[in-house]
Length: 378
Image (cartoon, rainbow, N blue to C red):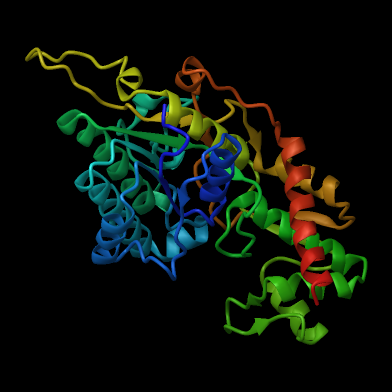
């Protein structure tokens, strides 16, 4: 257990994951927290990261910073996803060890598991068959990160623990129409379609003032000052019209979703209460008598799943959109199932509470509140 006055560096403290962990630590009484924005500290810059650790000397590190995105971003920017994530991990984990940090929490993703992994996916299915092609570079980077943690623990006796959250959503989510994950993207698309359907142009412009959109095909940018004709053209390019919303794929894939604040609670629980040795209970002895310590990471999720189509229908009901919901089967679905086996997490003393219907309601309310606050500030 870390003392309440321990200095904890949260890398990525402004993002969906990092901000939730920051808030959870503060709720638990940890006030000596350190966070730097990208402008203040570029984690791709090894020299800058070393100088930061020289100056701050944290007692513990939470590595929640990552280069993330949805299917399209992962397909188009494959080099960025592997290079940037490997570089961030190398710099932060390496400097943590060089500066004597004993406690580190590394945040990954359940996309590390093989495309055809048996369901639900236990930690032991890692590296047993090929990965999903669409996010392979990101997955390989995250596998490298958890193996770094595992290897430092085995060689140097550190307590660097890797947690692999399932699909996350919650406050401070990214609602970019192209680069965000599936739930926030669907919420924003269906919200805008409802506003168009009801002729509520004031609400459309409030949304675009806060989050301008660029047209894929022409790089045309729309915001609250754009004409109605231009707004309709660009939003249509993203499958958003007054009559219907068109979403990628068939809607058939099953997904597990975890509210980000619950992910934070589980992650901080692990940071404060779990020893690395307690995560390696299934390590076998090989033919040479060597104990093979593998798969010491921890899945963080609900152990429950829902189809993308069902999630979209919940969102339509929550938002009150009266138009049609359509699916573009020419676009990739990604992995068909990604359900976590969370028995290890349960054995370590943590269980989720927020189900998907409540989470969708909370996220949409958060999204609308942000637009209203922005509008009130004008």
